[in-house]
Image (cartoon, rainbow, N blue to C red; front, side, top):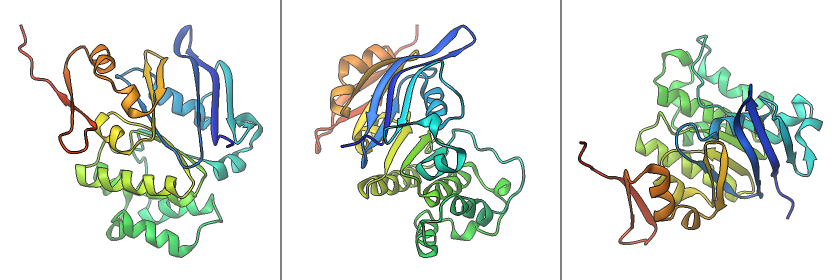
Length: 255
């Protein structure tokens, strides 16, 4: 199988400070892959490199076995979509115009499919409203709709559920998972490890810009690994029904 996205020996520096070092992994069509790790691990920086927003210092990024740098802007938009972490609107653009911007970047999606996405994300009542008058969670769902309507083969998302309540978090991840089951690929930076366990096929674990692991959730999120990363501030236990790991904050006495 040809990988959708392949990263080889990727490094990125900010001045003389290494933010990413020697990152190596690949994503296949149909996969939903999570990027996890503590604050400052390099998750957002990696997504910016993969989206072409910043250029790595060294290493290779390939889309379907072609270098990312060989795609022009229009070609890249057909293959790759990116939802950054912060999308605070500077202007009061109307929601329906923002959503249809994704359609301008892709001619391969029907109006019926656009309507379906709008209904699934429960944003139809928001279409006539300026985006800067919406809550953070509403804005995030609007931008997620735009990303889906772009209809790119690979979706990069930087903490897309950070502003969402648990119901809409579940809705967004189920929709994203469905699109991957239809052959798309997704790489998502995510803090909620229980959500990562539930929805992700594989996890890329970063710490201080280093790749610690890339494997299935069960192999990455071991008790030893979690305790080392989060310094015994969490508990890792099996779910009584599914036997999947559940990660909970631990109440400790502060002295």
